[in-house]
Image (cartoon, rainbow, N blue to C red; front, top):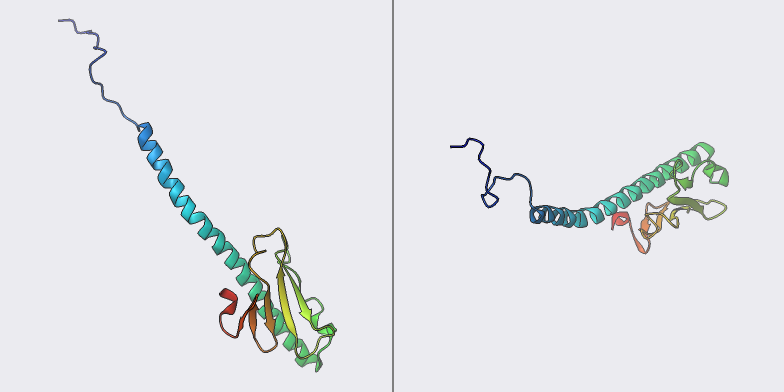
Length: 147
């Protein structure tokens, strides 16, 4: 017997690794999961940015009332340093403005989404002196900003 026998070309051999079909199945599963997860993630990011803007509007309203108590009257001097671009650093997502001009006791704070941003289709946010919150045409004193 020859200990250096040639292997037959037809003899089955043991192979390890993945077949093309197995790889394609894995790629298809990952694509399906990504197709589901990515839009949900985008909506989460938009909601987080809206929540940040709402928080900023609540802070501005609080500062506005504190300044009014200190000065005893409403005036445009009360809004100095408040509002403007939001966020203050990075790309502007919302512009926060006040009405009426000149400022009165019946003020309204408005956050307008800027063009070419993720939040452009998210709707304009408003907050009134009566704590009425609106997101586009949905208004109330509850959770209307998140509708």
